[in-house]
Length: 396
Image (cartoon, rainbow, N blue to C red; front, side, top):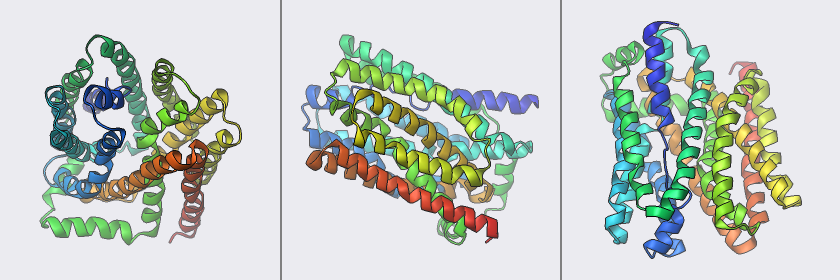
C-alpha cells in the first residue's frame, strides 16, 4: 500500500474511533431526570431533538463539506458535538439545555456524510475504492470498542463524580478533530471543488436531482435510511427492552456495554458477510433483520432478547455498509457530501418517526407492540431490496 495512503488511513481510523467516546451514554437519562430535575417527557424531548433538527441541518452542512473542506467540516463537527456538554454541569436552565443539544445536532450534521465521503475520495485517488466497505467496517469496529470502554468507565465515574462523564469526551474528540485535519485533502475532492461554480441553491438542487432522478439511487437511499434510523436509535431502544425484563440499572448498564463491545466484534464478522454479491445480500439480510424482531414478540425472555439484539446488530451494520457502498458508486464527487446529507435527511425523518412511534406504542400498549411496529417498518426494506435488484438487473 502507498505510504501516503497508509498514513491517511491510520489518521482516519484514529478519527473514526473517537467518533462517540460518550462516557455519559448509559447514564445521561438518569442524570437529567435525577440530578437536573427534568421530567421524563422533557428528557426524551432533548434526546430526540437532534434527529428532528438534523432534518433541517443535513443539507446546508453537506454543502459546507463539498464547497469548503470535508476535513474542516468533520473537525468542527467533532468539537461542536462535545464542547457544549461542558456547560451542562453549571446550569439548570431548560432553554440552555435545548441550546446545548441543538449545537450538538449541528456538530453531528457537520460530520454526517462528510467523513465517509472523505474516505471514498481518498481511496478513489489510489484506485482502491474496492477497500471501502472493509475499511469502513474496521473503523466502525474500533469506534464501537472505544465507545464500549467509555460506557463501562462512565458507570464507575458516575459513582465518583457524574459530571466527569460530560467533560471527558471533549479532549478525546479534540484528538479526533486534529487527526482529520492532519489528513491530506483528496485530489479527487480538490478537483471536484475547482469545477464548482454554482451557488448554494444550484449546488443543492443538482445533488437532489441526482438522487430523485435515479430510481436505483433513490431506492438505495430509502433502504439505507431505514437501517440507519434503526442503528442510531438502538441506544435508546435498549433500555425499555431491558426494563420490560425487569432488570436493574447495574445489569442494564452492563448489558449495554456488552452490546457495544459486541458491535466491535461483529463489525469484523460482517466483513465476511459483505463478500456475498450485493444484489443477493440486500434482500436476504433485510429479511433476516426484520424477522429477528419477531422472536421476542413470541417468547420474551432474556436469552431470546439477547440473541435478537445480536442478530439485529450484525445484519443492520452489514446492510448499512452494503447499501452505502452502492450509493457512493452512484454519486459524483463534486456533490458527494451534499447528496449524502440529503440521504441523511431522509434517515433523520425515519429516525424521528421510529423513535417516537416506538416510545408511544411502548407507553400505551407495551414492548411487544412497539417491537411489532419495528418489524413492519423494517419489512419495507425487503420490498425495496427486491425492487432495487430488479432495477439493476434490468439496468434502468
